[in-house]
Amino acid sequence: MKRQHINTSIIIPAYQSQNYIIECIESIINQNIPSQVEILIGIDNCDLTKDVITEWNKDKNLVSMFWFNNNVGPYLIKNTLGNIAQYEYLIFFDSDDIMESKLIESTKECSHRATTTRYKYSSLNETGKDVHVFPCAEGSFGIWKEDFISIGGFLPWRCAADTEFRSRVRRNFSSPEIVINDTMFKYRAHNNSLTMKEETGFNSEIREKYATQIKLLDACKVTTVQFTTTPNFVGLL
Figure (cartoon, rainbow, N blue to C red):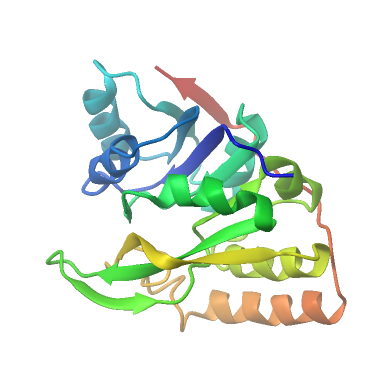
């Protein structure tokens, strides 16, 4: 049954994002949103990012910030904030990307048709120029909170856990995903992103290790994993 008004929690892990995070937040709050939306930002032990958001938010109170100790990584942050989110639908988004104006509205329109809603996106280089359009994002998507938790959320890996999660969704649900045909966000390509860093990039040793584990999980047809969160966080004003 289609739900007309879906309240949504937008979850953003942030690490060394001080140069991009405000543009990301403003791309969210400037949208025409008919129902309730909360923005939860998990700061992964990075003072510069925290200070930039705190200064921007002090007279607005439009985002909720959470401080995570010990660089727990984006996937533990996503699981933890997804678990405490107050609304029934979750959108995961990256702190250095920019939402197009209809992402949230389009997600709500498609949410009743599949377990996850995914997006085409364009790549934005350091000069701010769109350089390519991609058919589907792995890490930015919408999902019902109940479904996200029921199959265990993300594995607490350093990278590539969104790829594994997508495979697990496909094994669990008869209508696993729908991809919105329009470009819904701009992905910012830079050397500090997980996919570009030497230690976690596409050709890194650890990503190859995770690729092998994903193949094994696929072969074993694993449908659920233990839902892992971290208690090492505090809410910030």
